[in-house]
Length: 225
Image (cartoon, rainbow, N blue to C red; front, side, top):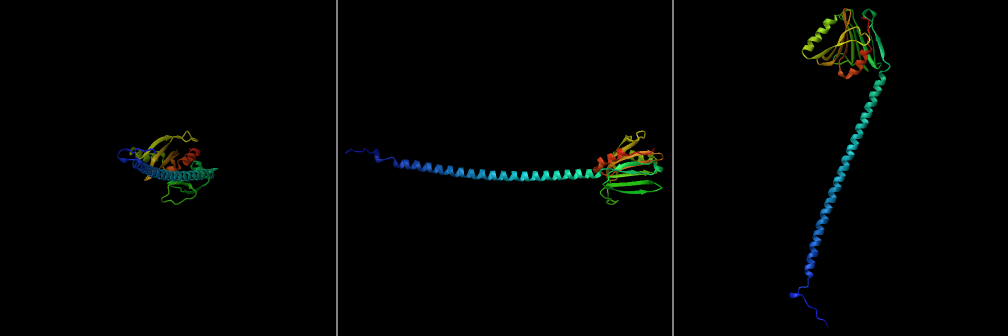
């Protein structure tokens, strides 16, 4: 019978191995909890990022749809303006002629004194005269060109408007002026002044929103000096 020799003090090593196993188990448990926590955090972040991405895509899509609708409306509005209508004034006052969008509404006043012609044009309908900033107005004023221009020269000295020389495309022999800025109290716009014998032709837009349309109308304008 073989005698087994015991370690000193009768220690077999088993309790030490059991302690190491417990430490390993605790460490593994901690690592598992940390991994689980990281996984939950990462998943939550992924869900949040996906939600933010979905929101951004939805917002971008809505903006794209709105921009497309706006572009279509603008295109439709431009198509509705054509073909332009033509206004032709009395031969007595130089046969003032110009083209304007057919989709615009028009109101015309005539008189034998002061403002001989007052032509109003505005998109769709005339909304009223008190607070409306009209897209286009054409006037023949019973006042010399120099007198009408002098008022704007004084405004230019105050820095309220800018005045520069202008020759109409279809009547290049006539020298007039373009006025830009505060053309009237609290009204930002543009005015073209032209001499017409002892009178003055005044072409106006009372809103900078209509400058493109205004420019087309002015370029189409002609009259007999």
